[in-house]
Amino acid sequence: MSSFRSCEIFPSFVSLSHVFGFLLLLPGGSANGEDEHANVDWDNLGFGFMPTDYMYTMKCSKDGSFEQGQLSRYGNVELSPSAGVLNYGQASSHLQGLYEGTKAYRKEDGRLLLFRPDQNAIRMKMGADRLCMPCPSIDQFVDAVKGVALANKRWVPPSGKGTLYIRPLLMGSGPVLGLGPAPEYTFLIYASPVGNYFKEGLAPLNLYIEEEFHRASRGGAGGVKSITNYAPVLKAIARAKSRGFSDVLYLDSVNKRYLEEVSSCNIFLVKGNVISTPAANGTILQGVTRRSVIEIAGDHGYQVEERAISVDELMDADEVFCTGTAVGVAPVGNITYQDRRVEYKIRAESVSQELYSVLEGIKRGLIEDKKGWTIEIS
Ligand code: COI
Image 1 (tube, helix red, strand yellow):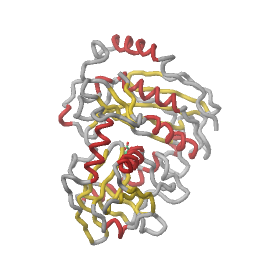
Image 2 (cartoon, protein in one colour):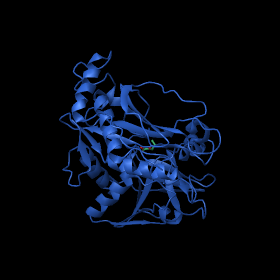
Image 3 (cartoon, rainbow, N blue to C red):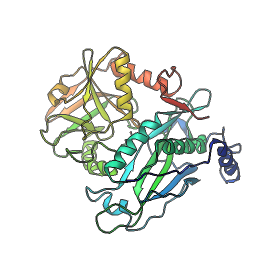
Image 4 (cartoon, rainbow, N blue to C red):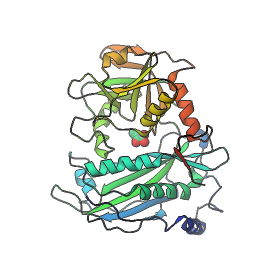
C-alpha cells in the first residue's frame, strides 16, 4: 500500500509566520498570535471536548497522490454518506479508521513541549498497514502535530493546569459500497485543552474485571489504535460506571484468565521490586506511556517484565497502576473480580508515584530530558 508522498503543512518552518499572519486576520484569534491565553476556566478542566481555533486536514487518494495539508478554522467536516469510515468503521471488523492521542505541555517559562509524537506516528503507520490504508510519513505526522499545537497555542493550559490533547485521525473518506479499501483517505488533526481523564482526578481508581465482554481477540486489531476497539467497550464501561467503578479491566478472550488492558489505558502491577505488564502480543495497545514507563522503571532499578499475567497474580500484587496518554500514570485503589474486591495500599512513596513524578517532570520540562523524548516547539 502506498503512503503519502509528500504533504507538507507548511513548505518549511519559515512559513509558520504565514500561519500566524493568518491568525492575525481571524476574528477571535489572539492579538499577537502567540502569548495570549484563551478564556478558559483552567482550574476546572476535565476531559471534555472544547473546540480550539484550528484543525489540520490532508487528503490522500488510494494511489498515494495527495493534496497539500492545511490548517483551517476548526469546524465540521463533510463526508460522503458512503465514506469507508462511516460504512465499515463501526459496523464490522473491516474497518478504516485510526486515531492517535498526543499532548502539548506548557513549561513554566511559557514555551511548549511535545512528548514523543514520533511514537504516535509510528503506531499510526502500524495501524494503517493492518487496515490497508496509506499513512503520512513520520515527518509529515510530526510536522502536522507541531503545526496544530502552535496554531492553537493560546489553548495550551498554563503550566501544571492541564495539557493540549492533540487528536490525529486517519480515515477512509472516499465512497465505497462493497467491502474494500476506500478510494480516498483523510488525515485530520484537532485539539482540545484537557485536565484529568478520570473524574476521580489524581485519586486512586477502582476497576471492575469484565468477564462477559472482551476488548480484542487474537488475529484482530486490538494491537492498533483502530476506532473499532472503542465503541464495543462502551457497554461494559457504562455498566461498570453505573455501579461506581472508574473503568473496566478486560481479560483475554481465549482463557478468560490473563490480563489485557483497561478500556482507556494499559495496566501494570508491582510485586516487590518487580514491575509487570501484559506483553503486547497483538491484542493490547502498545501505549507510548506504557513504553516510556517501562524504560524509566528499568533506569530506576526495577526489574520490568512484559509477559502473560493471570488475574490471580493481579489480586496478589502489592500495587497496581494504569498508564496512557489521556490517563497519565494513575494509581489503582481497588479491583473487583467476581465477588471479590482487593484493596491496594496507596502509599505516599508508591512506585507509581515515583514513575509519575519522573515522567511528568520530563514532559513538563522540570527534569532534564536525557532521552530526547521532548520536542520544544516555541
Ligand atoms: C489516549 O490515551 O490518548 C486514548 O486514546 C485513550 C482514550 C480512551 C481517551
